[in-house]
Length: 135
Image (cartoon, rainbow, N blue to C red; front, side, top):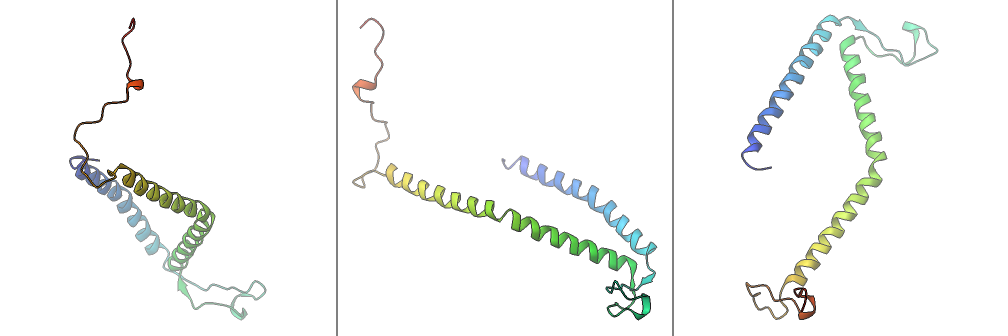
């Protein structure tokens, strides 16, 4: 990507982000305003309502649902990270191998005696030169 296209891509990315994030923020704010009633969360499947052992203090419904959404995203991200760990390790190993090969290639390109390379390429050996037909 050259310098001329970089600002255009950055501007396009900002416009797309604004087109997505502004309506999303409006929907989240509308959801929060519409669901302000307080709810009690019971974590006791055998208790009934108020006499349940594991209950939370009354919280606004939108906070409960947004917290559940955040926890779900975190669990999904962690599961994805675990699942792709093998590929990340393999990619790191390949990157190390590539770096080692690049350094080896650079060392082989350097002249043996520390003399600077001649600017003209060396002529290929006689056996590699093509001769015109009929000779």
